[in-house]
Each structure stands twice: as structure tokens, then as C-alpha cells.
Length: 535
Image (cartoon, rainbow, N blue to C red; front, side, top):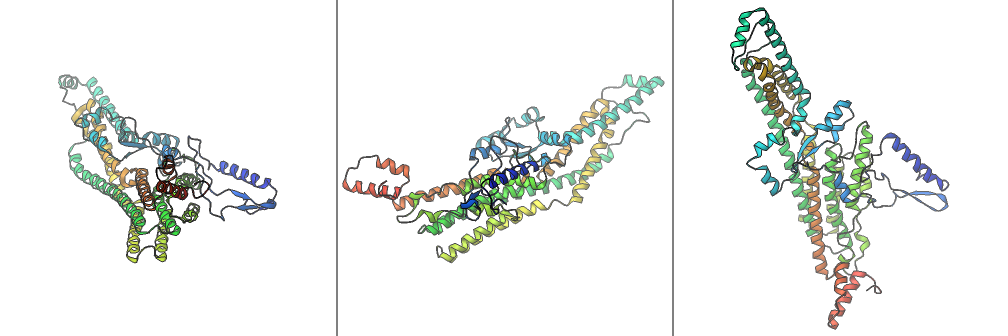
């Protein structure tokens, strides 16, 4: 609105202040943190002569780098202090506004476990001989499985067990008061003997033994299917890493750096490849694994605004950084202005009407290959190979969305859950005739923990995007592309006989020994500085 309304000089500031107050009233402003999470959604307006306001959207402008890369990494989940091989993530859906206050507190306490990328040290700890003892003595009460099952499942089993034990003991005490025979029998029984009387709550163990086999098949079949989805998701991310590296390498090796237009195509392709995994991360999760985002009590539109603000901060460091080649990386006589990439691309990508941002990036990569073909920078065979690799991007994106949108057949899941809950809740009645009042409660809770735990682990990995460290996979792709860009830049500088400013200054500091070396250093300085006077 401010960009379209002419007015006095104070109009822009007034409208901007009203807009900020409106955003704050809707709850779109994030809570304060070490790194500010809110970025400008639109580029600031520029003041034209005669008090008229012109929007800067008309001319491409880079995104402002308001958050450092270190601050962005601070938003990501942190490894557990007692074992750094995994992360307990308590953001996102565990803070959803649909829960009650008690449910939100339990969600923060529970969280979900995410295994981080392992190295040699973590694999050694994973294979230690004392791992089984450590799992029971050190990490049992810190286990997320126990925390997730403690309420309400294990609480209900413990309550039912305590109720059965209390009722049966009351029946026994009344019988001992009225019958001396029962009192003598109880006095003579051993620790492994249990006195059963009419009126006590008890079930035979035969139905549990027969149904336990069928229940085990149901739970195991579901958990195996969920684990298959988890493995498929990890394979898809591995394919994404491999294809991204291959596309980046092929673009750098196929498109010759003979003109500023070719360098611009190479640079845009590199930045699109780095943007794609981060768009996948935000496309498949509610918060992009940013723990600083608090979505409690926020409407869906405000959650999207907060997520877009974090995504914008990450894009700013991809599309606003200095060119990998720099002025010293250009061939003599080549203008550096043509190497500036499409800085307006993030603004187009973050528009609200763009429903699938990964698909938008894939289409932009297709346009890059089309431009390479039209300019004659690469042959038809090389361009065809690039198109096939970009097709892999589409296949991976479609497979990821299929896993996200299609759960295991819900009637099967619901039937398994009902069967398991009924079996575990009725288990104390069968445990009492075997273990008596002292062993019924702990045995029932322990067996229920084992059975419910298998089903709970399957339910957590049924949608594997909440159980994979996708931010680490995105960083792996970005680091690989940056490494190839730097390697290519060094090769070009060596090929053209120029260095960056620091290397040139180091060589210029050395006294020349011959006339030829002096001329070579002057040519080097001329290519680096770009100005006779500076050279």
C-alpha cells in the first residue's frame, strides 16, 4: 500500500508503523531469541522525488543478511548432553495449539528422538560391549519411549493392576476373618503360591498365550512397514545428495567460463542446487526444524509466516553472498556485472501463491539447462544428461510427498491399536493368579512397556520426516556444492594467471628481481585491481 500511495514524507513511516503493529497484533512476530527470526517479507520502499514512493520490488534487490550462519545453526536441534549421537526434538507438532495445557507440557517433555549422522567415534560407542548394561542403568529413565508411554498407557496399566490387587486383597482379608481354614492356608503358603478364592478378579493365561501370537504378528508387521518407510526416506535423501553433487559437477565441467553469461548460468545453477534441499526441509515439516519457532496458539497463516521468515534468512546467505569467482576470477576484459545471479529469485520463490517451492526450484533448473542449450554452451548430449538428472529431482520430490501424504492403511493401524490396548489393559487379571499381589503391578507394567514400545516406535517412524536430521543432509549438499565452486574458481584463476586480492598483495610485497617479473606482477595487479592507478 505504501508503494502505491503518493503523499507527504511521513506517509511511508506511518504506514510502516501501522503494518508492524498489525503484524504484532496477529502474533506474527516471533519471540525474542539470540538470533532474530523475523525478516522483511517485502523489500523496503524507496523514496522518489516530489514525495512519491516507488516500490523496490520492480527492480531486483538482494535479500538482506540479517542473521549470521552461526545464528541460523543455533536454531537447529542440539545434541543431547549425555549422548551426542542423537537429538531429542521438542518443537513443531509437540507444541501444537490443539492440545490442552497438560498435553502441551507432556509434548515438550516427551519430544521425539532423531539419530544424527554418525562418525567413527559414534559408531564405536554404538558397538560397545557394555551397551546393554548402559541402556538399562544409564538411559532407561531418559528414554523417549518411556516418556511417551508413561502417560496414559502405562499409567492406565498400573492403575488397573493396583485396582485388581487391592480388590483381591480385600476379598482375601474378608475370607480370612470369616474362615479359619482360609487363614491357615494363607499362613502356610510359600512366596510362589497364591490363594485364589471365589469373587476375585482373575483370568486364565491361555487366552493371552493364544492371542499373543496374533498380536505379535500385527504389531511386528506394522512396525516393519513403518521401518520400510523410514529406510526409503533415507534412501531418497541419499539419492538427493548424489544427484545434487552430480548436477553441480556437470554444470561446472560442461559449461565453459568463456563469457559472463556462461558464468551467470553456472552460478545460478549452483545457488538453485543449494536452495533445493532447504526448500525440501521446510516443505515436509511444520517448522523446518527451527526450535525457536513457537507455534502455540497461532493460526496456520501465522505459522507459515514464521516459517517463511526462517526460510528467508537461510536463502539470504545463498543468494547474497559474494560471487565465488570474484573480480579476480574473470578473464581479462570480462565484465563482472554479468556474473551477478538472479537476486530477485528468492522474492519470487517466497510468494504466497507458490504452493510447492521445491517444484519451483526444479523448474528454474530446467530453465537453466534450456538457456545452456540455447546459448550453445554445451552440446545436446550434455544437456540431455543434465535434463535426466533434473528429472531425478522430480522423482525424489514426488516420492517424498507420497510418503508424507499417505499413511499406512488407517483401519489396520486402528485395529492393531485397539487389540494391543485391550490385551495390555486386561493383562493384570491374568498376572495375579501367577505372580500374586507383589509381582502383578511391576510385571504388568514391564510387559506393557515392551509391547506398547514396539508399536510406538513404529508410529514415530511412520512419517519419517520428523525422525531424520534433514538439516544435516541439507548442509551436506550445500557444503559439497561450495567445495566444487571453490575448486572450480581456483582452477580458473590458475588457468587465467590471476589470483585473488590477498594472494596478489602477497606477491606484490616481494621485491621484483628482473624486468620480466616486474612486468608479470604489474599485469597481475592490473587484472586484480581493474584500475591503472590502483595497479
